[in-house]
Image (cartoon, rainbow, N blue to C red; front, top):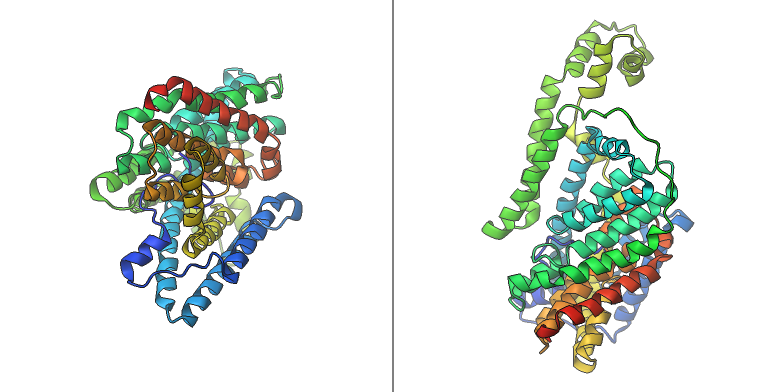
Length: 500
């Protein structure tokens, strides 16, 4: 599933363009600022901020800083113009509509990342890494295994969660091979975006098209083979650049800490809860995710109350006198004290029964990535409110051949959110064939793979694999990814000619 970093994530069919929201709440027509100095300035601010975000590894300037700054200024200028014309209420409504979309995204990602951090704390990913290494797979085999896992998982789970899940495993397995980590992360991004493009509920684009009724449920699966081609072609090229050796073999299995399997089950129930909230209650998936977070919170409470190490630590702490130093307390609670202990029981306790606090997992989220999402979403919402998105959509389907337009829509989704573009296309309701609707569904779904910042999967992995998987390392492989992009389009025309 593709959550483009540039506006949404795949699980938010409630996305709405600011202009539409304003029309609902106000009888006044929004101002057309596309030819106004504010419109030009907004474009310049967004371009400059985006450029600085792309060269983060060169400047060491966190990507969220320029994006949040640009987003704030864009809306300051928009609000000033509307206030000057006595229409400040419209600007406020439009901003709140965009903010509401971000809040849904933020809460969804926050819960997903919290669960992933909790599973990492319990040794789930380390256990998977050890299991894979125990099979004595080569780096090239692991490259394909993680890629296909990402492709399959993303057809039912959003691409960001899929990428972060597989990224944790890849980083753990490739700690001695940076090249393996880099290429595998690129592969996972491509696979995760491709995996969501053929499932009616796998991506925001497919979900929007399905709900609109322009493509029947069963016809989406005709995109399966083109999606596989989109993933396999660049992966085949990258395969030959993967180190041929094998990672160090691991003989002993790594036990998952107490509660690890339960957290996995709770995470699955959380995803099911979010899906049910959306499909049966017409509530945002984020609401279901927040309910799912309470599953983990209550389980965290249970873990704290029943932890052997926690209880033993509390008993020992009560024995410490006021004259003992803080260093003495720290020394007692240090894991190394248990690891060096000659008592097997103490070592087992610290390894398998460490205290667990869910709020520590929330604190360890990748906040720079979450704030970067805020900056991008608020900025693009401002550009949409100004009128640029409607202008671009009108030009595409009013003056260009539909096939070329749909290919350009896919390329644009590497820069602008795929959900927003698809919603604009659906709003225009161009008179195109079923095959063209499937084409734009495919291209907008996989187009974000062209750039590391083109999808939530890429942005999330950049935060997770800092310094190893970056914008520039991904950009070096864009030609190979572009080959897969056009290859999938060619296969679609060949296999699904009956729809044109």
